Structures are given as C-alpha cells and as structure tokens.
Image (tube, rainbow, N blue to C red; front, side, top):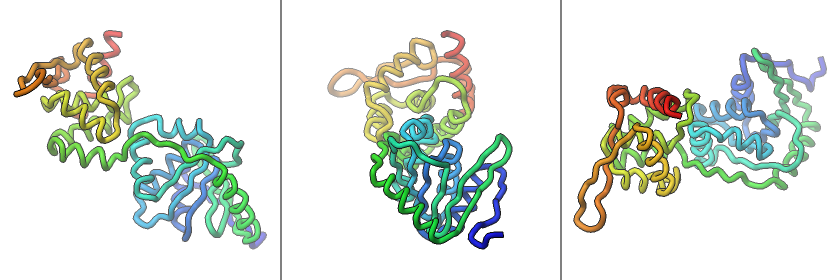
Length: 275
C-alpha cells in the first residue's frame, strides 16, 4: 500500500465520518462542497465535542439555505457561529466535494443510502496544495447571512423574560416541531407556548423581535391566522395608559388537554382539518 494513502474508513453515516476526521484534527478544518447530510453531521459533532477544531464551511448558497431551512437546524448552527466554532461562506463557483481538509489529510466523503466512507490521503505535498487551492475559494466566497438566533439565546431569554415553565414548554414544542411534517414554524410555537401559559401577545412578540426570531408584525399576522382557525383565543387586559393588551389562550379543548410536547401534532392536525 502506498504509505501516503490511508485505509478507507467505512462508517454508519456521514456523522461518523465527520467524527473520525474532527477527532484527529489539530487545527482548523475546511469543509468544501458538503451535502446537507454532511453539514448535519458536522453540526452534530461540533455541538457535542468540547474540544473540536474550528470548521470553515464552504458551500453553494442553495445548499446552505437548505441546511438552515428548519428552525432547530438553523438555531443550532447559529450557536456554533456565535461561539466561533463554525463559519459559513457561500461560493458562486462549482465546488468539488464533499471534502474535509485538515492540516494533515484530505478526506473525500462518499455516501450511500446505508453507509458512508471516508477516502483519505495524508501525502503532505498534496494536502498542502489542496488546502491552498480551496483556501482561495474561501477567500473569494461571500459570508453567509444566518438570520436565525442561536438556540441558547432563545432558551435563556425565554426563561429570563417569562419563566422556566414557559421556556420548558417552548423547548418541548421545538423538539416536536423538528420531527413534525406540518406547516407550523417557530413563530407559531412561540404563540402556542404563550397561549398555553396565558402570556400577553405584546410580551411574546416583543421578546421575539428583540431576540431576532421575527418582527412584531409577523407575530401579529401569525396570531390572526391561528385565531381565525380556532387554535388560540384572546382576552383584553386593561393597562393604565393606552389600548388594552391581549392575553393569549389556547382555543381548542384538544390543545388544552395536550401535553406541551403533543401540542404541535394536535395543532398541525387542526390546521390540516380546516384547510
């Protein structure tokens, strides 16, 4: 066997290949042309790894948009970006890959429906040339604008602005949302969480805008949508000065009887029934 070639590593999935690569990397890793599955694998490893190297992720804009299409995925990526563990750039050029380039080797990922393989070389001259080559692509690419707030910030501010019970309800609904195939999104579950805890629309929408989740106008529009379909109701709460504010309440008995983790499925079913 050529001494500069490493044996092919066959793993269960792309996440395991990413784990293998990041565990042995001593400097930053450049990920080039990753598929959404490889991005998921990198995020999973970085989120669990206390001493992982930093990763520069270079992909086409369409792939990055797909990777951050769901709130849970996007907010987890945002956490890593905020912690300076991960950086994202969108390239207009056609990219080879998926490739993971460390300081010591280049790994090409090949995936099938059931397994994933890491084809690697540690030839020093080739590794150096490859890193320089793709570093130029990185320099020419544009930073990717991630608009979703970090999940940790969402969780911490919910507990600070409201209480632990409301924050726990949101977390249960967020986990359920990640597994749901319905049309609900992070603003919907914020409103349902607020309604389950009888919070004010003003308070949850102000929180959502300040944390970067969505504008108050979006919260208002979503509230109207859920209210028209009977998922939530409101009651007026007088204040000293100005118009009364609206308290959010769950509007359907099935939602009122559901656990927080079940609310998403029940709400999705109710919305589907009236569409």
